[in-house]
Amino acid sequence: MNQQGELIQVNSDQDVVRVRQLVRTVAVAVKLSLVDQTKLVTAASELARNTLVYGGGGTVEVTTVDNGRRPGIRIVFADQGPGIVDLDLAFTDGYTTGSGLGLGLSGARRLVDEFDIVTAPGAGTSITVTKWCR
Ligand SMILES: Nc1ncnc2c1ncn2[C@@H]1O[C@H](COP(=O)(O)OP(=O)(O)OP(=O)(O)O)[C@@H](O)[C@H]1O
Ligand SMILES: [Mg+2]
Image (cartoon, rainbow, N blue to C red; front, side):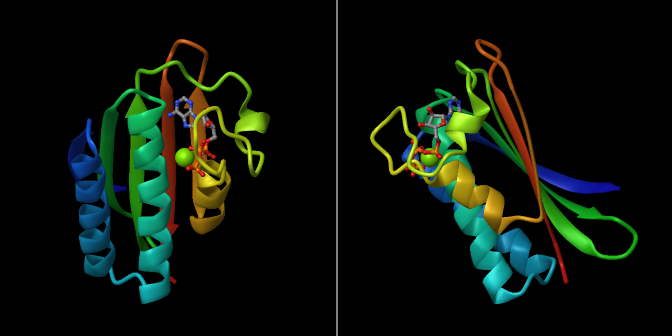
């Protein structure tokens, strides 16, 4: 069940900072533990940076959710960029087509409870992550 969501356009470093701040605020509001707050903010920061750098900018939507047993946070990162041609390669630690460490995608996936990616060459990338309260 979805509740209120907030959308941030990501076109600059400052927008990535806004994403971090919003995710922290919502994580506190749904009472994620301090450790889980930090994990989610870290994951969101990596994915928003990918949206900016590789996706050419896009949107981040932060929504509170409730599965009937516990609350959580869902975040969708979407861009209309080039897409990811080889997903296995992109999730390999150390693989980068830029100047990064190649740890963002793999790290982000480990830091959340659910991670879904939809991407196709030329058709952009959409990544949905969820973190549940425990
Ligand atoms: N939104 C995206 N659109 C297109 N390609 C992407 C996107 N996100 C990631 N990629 C591709 O996947 C690769 C791996 O991403 P990942 O975040 O793991 O590493 P990185 O961004 O290169 O380095 P790091 O995140 O460690 O600074 C990127 O180098 C890029 O080729
Ligand atoms: Mg990255």
